[in-house]
Image (cartoon, rainbow, N blue to C red; front, side, top):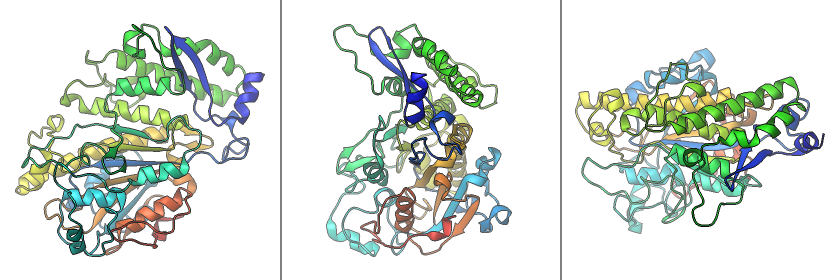
Length: 472
């Protein structure tokens, strides 16, 4: 019973083994045996982990297919066309949509200025109107551009990190492309998380490498000449095979619900291993959206959806196992110019936003496609149990782009897609429209939702106001 006793009081539990000298760890999801009788806290009394994440995409939104026709709760409002992917996955109940927010006095500024604002609350220079920015002579859309303050994910990570293997986890999908007028955006388009100027945390865009990193977390690194470093590709034996005996012994000490959760967790990891092992060989998806039917990770942009789904599954595995409490997902960078052949859009995203009506419609179709992938991440969270609820119940996801309307670059009417219930603090299924209020007010609110004692936030639009309209 020693393993069970350890499990009852531990927030984190891993089955450990070795593959050809490489330490591996299969981190377990939060099981009933780890929790109190109600499944609302760990057995020792500490709360279940609430995670904070960012889902960021470049180039803003087109309001005509984004803004719902009404506000309110429940059936009082309906999803707009570009948010319908969340309805298709039965996720409206977990969405808190906030529209109408501005940056300062809502004057013209470009993408570089916007990304500094929505991720870090400004550059550190006190500004209350847009014209104030010019006093400080900083670079925002040049090769020297960067985040001059820590991004909000890193501020929260500093406050929340305890014993999790990762202080924060950074992932991404598209490599940054500038094909409109060749503007170099410095560090802010290629990277989301920043600790300070030019101190960025690059996102991992390779699902195989992320898999390897997650399953080596907390284990001694292999050293010496000739030691293999790639768990899934260079070693023929499965990660699960190294811990299968311990897992089976553990199951005999668990209740039926936990045993089923452990089986499902291991089956998901096995499926991920198999798909990663088939990298570059193609594959198929039968349309169920389950982990076991994902295509192999892509080697071309045409396979973009497969890569996105794989990354989403890995993110959720890390969260379900309490490997981190803070993460960021950079779908595409600020002012990104990638094409989307997967939806028959061959022109660059940023150029389409500055084109004619037909080109704007193509840009809007890119936005909807990106929302299908955001919805896929949220759906994977909703499918992952945690205590008496799910990972999505215990998550606050900040879905944001650097500009509001990319056609005008006037910094007004940001649309922010929050997902998750933040440990019961967000009721969800709510559209709140707050014209003239500031993005920094929402950022301060999110920090308080994460339990931080923050009372002010931002250097552009520095504020002590919050947005209680979104709270339970």
